Image 1 (tube, rainbow, N blue to C red):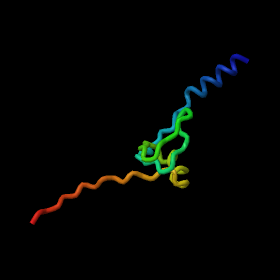
Image 2 (image 1 turned 90 degrees about the horizontal axis):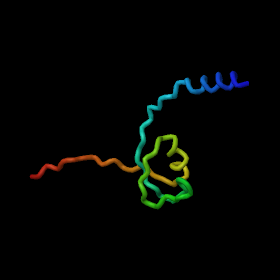
Image 3 (image 1 turned 90 degrees about the vertical axis):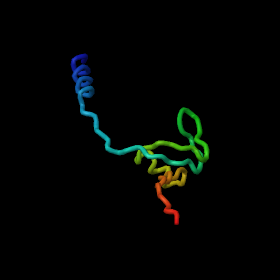
Image 4 (image 1 turned 60 degrees about the vertical axis):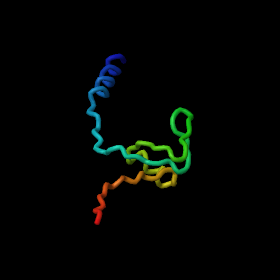
Length: 77
């Protein structure tokens, strides 16, 4: 009935959304793969992904994690 549908819709709308603490990280495409709306990635392309998005792609060698630059200072003599 309409009353039940309204109740269910209200219950769904008031559910608390899970809060993700995961941060996106930058990955480099190694082997192109289908991505968004039929488009393909290209080798060397940078993608910003959540860890759960990257997991299977890392396992299959499609992407690699971008190395973070470490700032170092060299003392001159």
